[in-house]
Image (cartoon, rainbow, N blue to C red; front, side):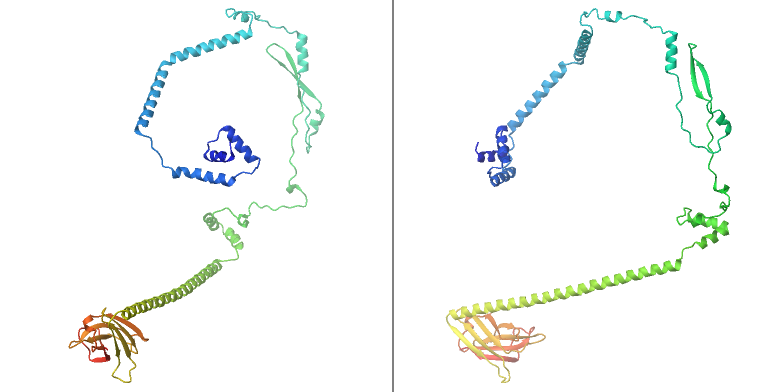
Length: 432
């Protein structure tokens, strides 16, 4: 089989024993082998369960499998009913009898099965050997008890009477039920008395004070007496209280109070520093956030201005491309005013573009309004707020209003007063 076919079958786990051994031998020999291709096919084989759709068996296949299982169950019931416990017991008894007969045949191969009991009849009964008195005496001498020597420790103040009887032995006779005498050897020497070593109180020139009446348990740092029991004892014995006061620790309740107050001060200082650091971090990040918000507002205003400029440019282009273009220049009656305006109108599309500059910025409810008088009636066009720099404004009006000789006015008014012209005219001009 080629190596590629082996790789394909090995990835899917479909190799036989011979081909699998061949594949393993190729890998063990470290020959030129497509390991990358093998890995890719193994990845594909691992993805097969997720790629392929599961096919559910049909109802007919399910019915066949169920009927097969039911039939197998019935067959098992029939077999168990035939093999009754009596039959099994008889089989076991037969096997036991056969095994016993085979064992007896191995013990007495020449005899028949009927003469098996003759083997046991040939054994002599009451065959007891008589032992003579000389043999009994020999056995007694061989098994006579002799104690092993014991190494005795050095003793102090051993009595002299024990030294005189050191080598004497006492022999006792013990008779059993058959009147046989056994000579038992036992030591007659009594055990030596162990004398304790001399106490320190017996040495000369050394006086040990009697400490039985001293109450020295308070000297131990880890005294195991509870506090409440110790207080009771001190109330009963004033000397005990004096001895305890003698060994009181150097630090007192005031020292403990100073230590605890110092810990509280350190904790408060740490808390204050933590709050100060948190406040500084909050203020710092708040300033950063406000700076970003201002930048966002500036960018939004720039975007709005660019959109307005683009819209104005598109309107200007639309007006210039149309037919019937009219122009008007607006000026102020006040010679000291720097306000001016240029107007481009399209009679074909009914659009107007105003380029304004020099208008003062109004405060409060003030607003600028544009009016046009095509004949005998003044028509309202649009209202706006002035900006500090020159700006452009677009408006849509009726085509009938756009004609030569029409008068355009810009007035300063209040927002709420709509529908009528104000008294203060800022700019005015005629369409040409």
